[in-house]
Length: 308
Image (tube, rainbow, N blue to C red; front, top):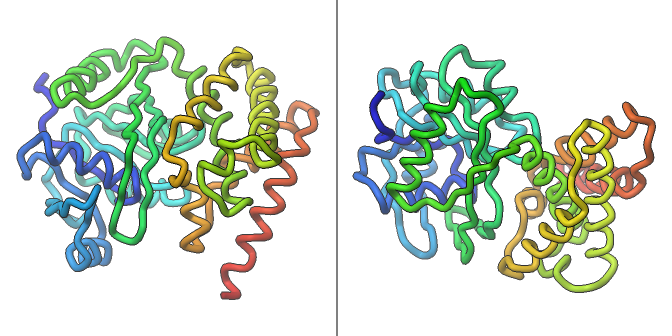
C-alpha cells in the first residue's frame, strides 16, 4: 500500500488554513489540494489566504471535479457544515483514502462513516492551538497537536500510514491508547471554554484569570465530566486541571471557534456542547444548571442574528 502523498483539505476556517499552510510548506504544491465549491473557490482566489502574514497560493479544486483522489482527507469545517462537506469531498475519496476530522464534539467520525461507503476514518482531535482568524487572515502562536487513535484493529494499517506521514513532515501528534476517553475529555473542555468565552464575548484571557468566567468554565466542564461517567467513560479528576492548564498556556488574545462564530454572526456548534449535555442529562436524570444557562444565553445571542 502506497504512502500518503496527496492531501486534501475541505474547510478554510482557522484550522484548515493553519494546517494547510503547514503542509504546504512541507510538500510540493500539487500534493496539497483545497476542496471547495465554485463560490468559495472564487472567494479564496479573489481575496487570497494568509497565515502568519505569509500569502499562500493554494491549489484550489472545485468539488464537482472527478478523478483527483487524495491519500489523506482532512475535514476542517464546523459541525453545522459536516454533511455538506462530506458530499463535496466524495469525488476525492477512494477505497484507500484516510479521513480525519478536526471537528469538535464526539460524533463526527460516526457521521462520516455513516454517510460514506468508502475511505478509512481515523479518530482525531485537534487541541492546544490558538489561531485567530480575521477575514482571509489567520495568525497563531501555538500550533497544538493532533491526538490520533482507532477504536478497532481494522484500521491499524491506515493509522500506521498516517503516523508515518506526520513523522515525515514533523506534524505534532500523539497516539492515544484510549481514544474514547480522549474524545470525551476534549468535549468536556469545549463545553467549558467555547461556551463561556462566547457568552462573555471575550478571549482566552477571559477564562485565564480568576473570576466568575473561569468558575463557570470549570463548572460546565465538571458537569460534562459527570455525563461522560454516566456514559461509561471515567474521566480522571486530574483531567479537568490538565485542560485548564492547557487553556492557560494559549495566546490570551486568541479565541475558541464558538467565539469566532459570534464575532461574524454565524450560528455556532452549541448543540454539540450544552445541547448534547442537556440531552444526556435528561437521559440519565441528572442536573446540569450551568450548561442549561449557557445554552439559553447562546440561543438568545443567536436569535438576534437574523434581525441585524
